[in-house]
Image (spheres, one colour):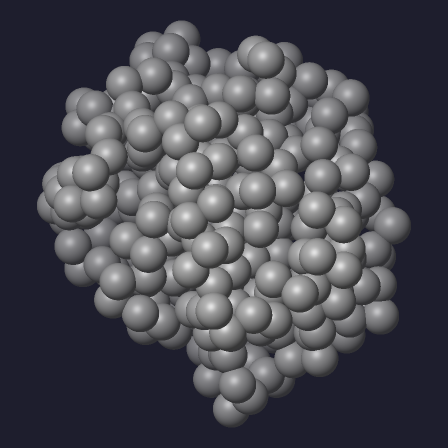
Length: 330
């Protein structure tokens, strides 16, 4: 698809054909298996002040926490015991953990369990990324949020757009499978901007694309503004699947937050990943990037079974492999 065709499909009010094509492309290029990746949100301490985020530095109403590396390892062990072959370790962009600490932790998890490890810890130096990759981390998720630099500056006033893109380049250079993504329905965002986002994803040759609808948090400067719709989010998802074919795309929790059937709908239009939250229950309510996040008080084992049932309800199977990049293996 070219830019005009992407824009036209983003704006359509009759997306049935688009959704059908996305599902066909998904079956052809990634198959029917859905990968379950256990998400451990190990710290909500953040040094950034992004105006859309519930754990932004200036939100003093957040009870901050930082799991010890021992607690993170125990959470990983519990997730592996449930059957996860892939883990996602996510935190605020804080620098609260030294590179040496994370290198030791990653090596310990890798040696003990042999699972795939995805990190989502924000911007770092190339040297730090290389050390994390050498320790055994397989993937890194760093959203660019929007390809429109003017909008990026408004949303992330203490970040630099060029630095974000440079980090994505470094991640590829040091050998990570690279994930990035956007929010859909941001204030000031247009369909033309989303089309440019999708084209940038293709240019970056991403292995994973993580995104969801923008959900305004009442404790941020964007409180009270309108959020993203499930319809536009699903059309964006379908187009990413068609344009990028064999990329991994999660049905994110945010989709389930704005619609009880959001994650199911996402699986039906191109998604092939779910990320059950296996963070210890006592910490979950403190890690809210947006309000009304589902499953905050649900035991990890129950979350795992709920999403397994969701996969089967749409006629799909749960993957038994770690779900590494299909692009690199291809």
